[in-house]
Image (cartoon, rainbow, N blue to C red; front, top):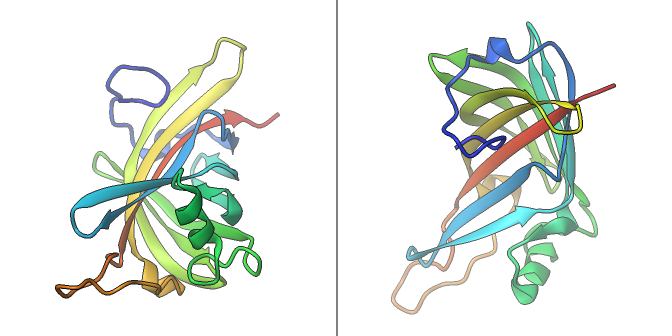
Length: 188
């Protein structure tokens, strides 16, 4: 489904992202993550405070920041733990950053290579998805949409806390799935 409509979105090449600068609209967008806790259930979280820019044309790019203290799983105790030094350490590292190095089409897929910084540690990541198109909203704003997903190893970013399980193994996997659904509005 497209983030702009309730109909399936056609796949469009990255080169069709219209030229110009587009401000990611956090009201129309979503940044999410998923972790398979105990190997049984998926726990989802969301960043509520973020901003960013998508640039289209011949050399498209995506960059943005997340307010670390805005990350929520909608459970107060778990969220407090996520903000502690055992996870995001939001007092010392108030934001997460992403900056693309390349945005390109590979067949029907949009592939974004970039650098993600969490807790002052920067590592390369790859996000894959699609450019879903452009549309004018009811207020006359021109918008573009992208949908991206990738997987990171949280321990690469210093997010190492875990709890051993009585029968062996650990509470949390190292793998975290990231999902970004961006609707961006044309900058004036």
